[in-house]
Image (cartoon, rainbow, N blue to C red):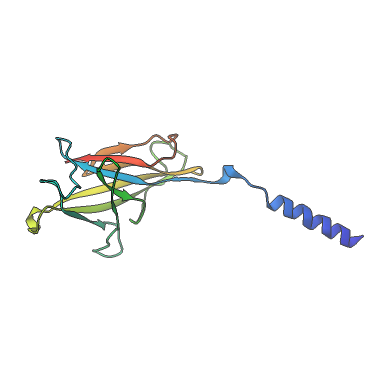
Length: 172
């Protein structure tokens, strides 16, 4: 009789532990496609166009060393527009303990990177800018909430917005 009890007990335990609870999963939404253009709308990341940047490098401001490179690949759309494809790589720091946009719903984090754009072989022609990415973290979602470039907001996302690739356009 005791072996039947243990057999039934193990079978019930196995069924309970196999339960799938999709509500307990946290959505992650942190992909950024970053486009650079001038005021005339020219793609500044296309090195073949006159006046565009010939390259760029990214350094993590919160990195453990002074030089903490972040790898951001350059990609191209089907319309031949170039963009920086940022998924992750820079360290995140807690921005506050309670999100000011949604008090009591979680914490927010931010990453800061220094982007150096190269125009020619002359170092004095380099252009730098600070990219700050702010993240919203709740039990149900971890997502980009704001993107600032040199202190100016260039992207924002509402807390209930669907998961997607976030498109950021920076005008220089």
